Each structure stands twice: as structure tokens, then as C-alpha cells.
Length: 88
Picture 1 (tube, one colour):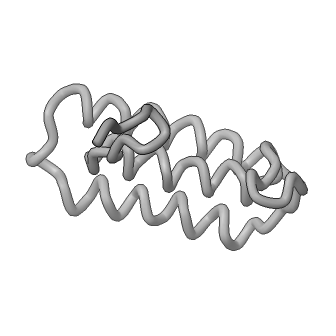
Picture 2: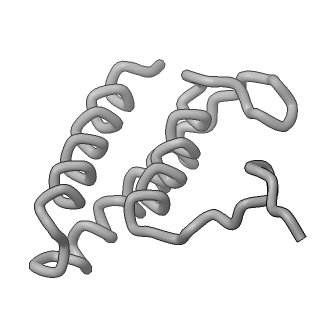
């Protein structure tokens, strides 16, 4: 059986988890449309929840991440937090 690119298994990783949570935060802030509906909705509580999830992840994985993972998580958190305070 041949596996096409659309059938390839996604490999779970911390970076993918971080990006997934961050994507949910961006959608909840109304900065990008929901890929399923195409609608832009704003839910500040959900945005804050997703940012808080990333903060918790950072705290719980302290001293267990490699340099790339630390940089990714810190950069994304700073970016999301700045965007969050700018939304109405």
C-alpha cells in the first residue's frame, strides 16, 4: 500500500502541541477565521484559557525542554500575550 502525503501520519511533538494551542488562541482572539466554518469569532475567555494552558505547559516542563523548544514556547507566549492586551 502506498501512502500519499495527505495520508501520512502526523508525528506528535511538543512543538506541534504548542502550535496547536497557540492557533486556538489566535482564533479565539478573532485574528484568524475558524478553518471549519470560515467565520471570525472573538472569545476573550477562550483566548485567555489557551494562553494560560501554554503558561502552565511552560511551568510544568521547566528544565525538561531543549533550547529550541524553550525559544519557541517563550516567543509564542510573548506574541500571544501582546496580541491579547491589544484586542477589544
